[in-house]
Structure formats: structure tokens, C-alpha cells
Image 1 (tube, one colour):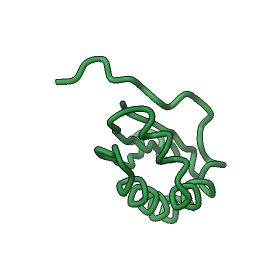
Image 2 (cartoon, one colour):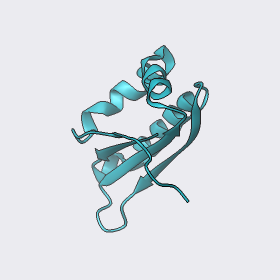
Image 3 (cartoon, rainbow, N blue to C red):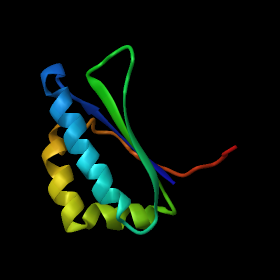
Image 4 (cartoon, rainbow, N blue to C red):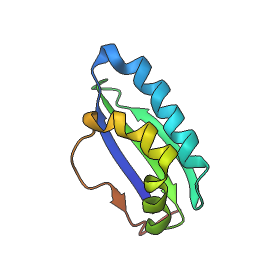
Amino acid sequence: MIAITRYRVPEEQSDGFAEQMGRVLDALAASPGYRSGRLARTVDEPTLWALVTEWDGAGHYRRALGAYDVRMRFIPLSAMAVDEPGAYEVITSR
């Protein structure tokens, strides 16, 4: 499964956001079931970012979010998250 969380980040906070999100990815990468992750920013609207991670299953993703180290790094950034569904079941992959 993949998890996509979008963020609205003011331009003056973008450097710090990228650094903090790098630490979130490091914490997530240590979780069982983690496959990959990346942080991206739109080309046309630089205040819109996306954290995209891939997991062995939804249970792994949810357990990883509950881990203390992940929560401590992720929670300060949650105020910038766009409120929308973020967990996706992969239907087709090539």
C-alpha cells in the first residue's frame, strides 16, 4: 500500500520542513514493513508538498505511525497537513 500526505508549507518554512521531514522518513524507514519513501514538492505551486511512502500493508503503516519516535517527529508537522484520505491500496503496478 502507499500512503500520501500533502502539506501546505509557507515558503519561509520550506528549508526547515524538508529537514524535519527527512528525520520523519528516517524514523519511518526503521519500521517493519517499510519499503520506500520520498518527499516531493509541486513544480507549479511550491507551497504544496507530499510525503509518499510505500508499505507491505496498512497494518505496518498504522503501527509505524504509532511508534513513539515517529510521533515525536511527525506531530509538529501535522498542523500543515491537508485534511484528506491518505492511505491507498495499490491496484495495478508495473
